[in-house]
Image (cartoon, rainbow, N blue to C red; front, side, top):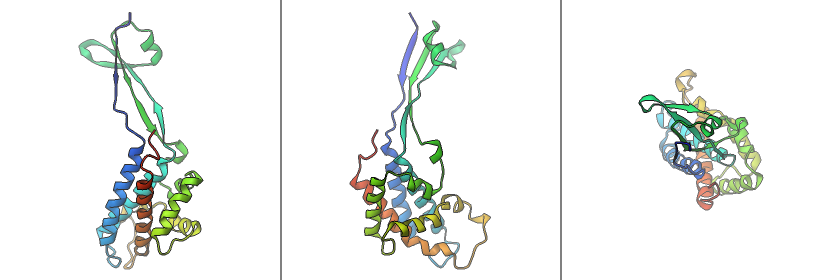
Length: 203
């Protein structure tokens, strides 16, 4: 008889991705509403764009997230140290061993990107249209998908760019100041969608 024990790790629900996205959106909106459009060095603009674009990134990725079961097996060796072994080794060993029943959330490799334009287009059409409907209701300027895509294309790499502002030239009137209100509207649309569909991604 095998001398084995089994343990389980905490199961993290996929919906946590949307929950984090919502919280980041709320934080970003507060920063964006206080940020100065005229001060090129207003730190709140950077924290706004970083949190706002990360919120969108997580939201878009949440539709493609899948749960993968990934158990881990270990031999118990001298001094109670653990040595990882394969599943076959675990099933065929008679020495003390333990197994952790673990699952993790994975994003498809092709979507492991910060490119907001690419990630948005990966959303199923039904959810894409529903999300955009909320954006149109919150925005004065974005009223169709073409408007939205044009805007998203202009900020698609902001999560990377705005983390390192010291690596770029700074203009007295940075062009991204004009993008603040549109992103606030999009984030408000995101919040409305998630609150209307709290259990949309729960597996």
